[in-house]
Image (tube, rainbow, N blue to C red; front, top):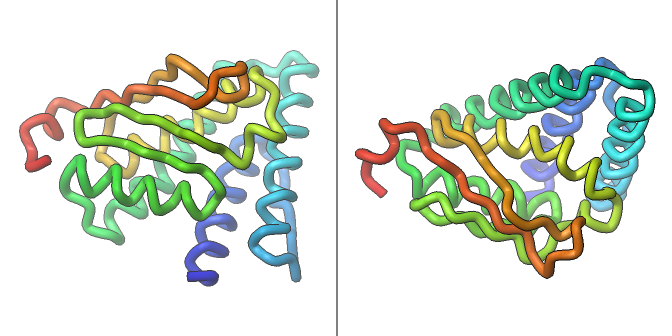
Length: 174
């Protein structure tokens, strides 16, 4: 399980670094737990720097979403995910590896009761980096969009979101 977690963390860091056009945080020799902390600090720092510099945040969100989608799509194909239920189960497992208590249902309801990153991210950083989540879920499910209603980083006791599956998933086995 540690090898899978390390693989997930490295791929996530790679997708994020590519979006920010920065080198991947090395983390060589670090445990998964310490690498996750490094990644959280890295994403916070990169997001704040992008916001402060006046970078086109719409373009950055698009890159984050596209790179998240590529990662999710790769996993969907490797894991042979064919239903909404399977996509949400895979998301739960992946998010657990990075300290996020993700609960997603086949009808698209998403709830996060705890999130490792909420101790590191400001509300604006969370809103920006969540484009990666949007892409990842879309990739895992073969398409769709994620919309947040509540966020831990904004003082809510949990995150609540809705994932709208693409129409073809609506007719698939749940």
